[in-house]
Length: 328
Ligand code: AHR
Image (cartoon, rainbow, N blue to C red; front, side):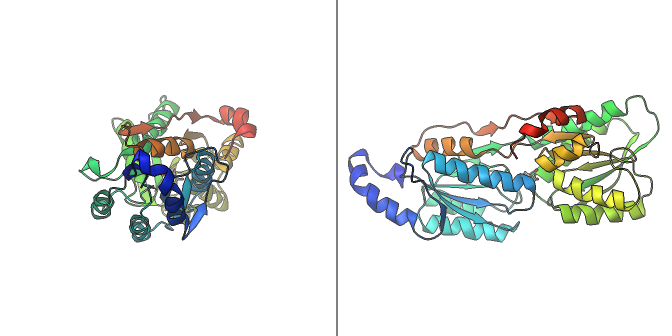
């Protein structure tokens, strides 16, 4: 609504606008008076599948509060249809801006077109969509998942640089069809492919959850007694897999080397304990940048089409050094 209200009408309409936006399901509203309280954001979160996701939700909710943005929040429980319903409901409620982290990459054009027709700007956060029409959203804020996969692959190549024996790798993929699963797989493969000694002997989704990571790793261990390396697309699946590896009488980090992505506290603890060998960071702390972008797009200001999060990697030694100050 903000951008449709002229400067002259703004003062008179603010109270009405707040009443309309503030009703029906806001989970967080600013009351500190420090921000632009005329903005209402509808946010559709993927779910609560991982430690990363919990930290991301907190970051978005805290940042909305600090920025004075009224947040309508919904959890899609890893289902695309729930996200589409939430977005349609935000359109009906005439929110000022919609932000969402798409559970999968495909199938968004229709609902994004509906938002565009309703003149509600959309921000993609964390994950991308594969829509050809990039005018359907204003910007995409999040990690470079392909680069994360490359970083994982580079560590592996370095770790085995003196070995000529085959290196048998199993892969726990994230949610099927999601950008991080597609891209982390592609980036990793790009780096290891030139060397034929690296062989991915099994690759399956673990849905980014600890429980599924454990279940799939148990199956991998039964059918492949000779696994050298596990590449898990997030810490949670890696942590579930560690339980499976220990259950099978093997030592995680030694008998089977483990690379994961995220660097949440539990993952960093396992890295410091020697159970994981290397973690590629993926930052969930996107809230403050998201709120800044939201304010700009609602005002009709130009924003960068792509905002990439800054991230690093951690060895076991580095994890020991930073563990006590890790925020999430
Ligand atoms: O989209 C980011 C990914 O989603 C995180 O790496 C994973 O933990 C989460 O579920």
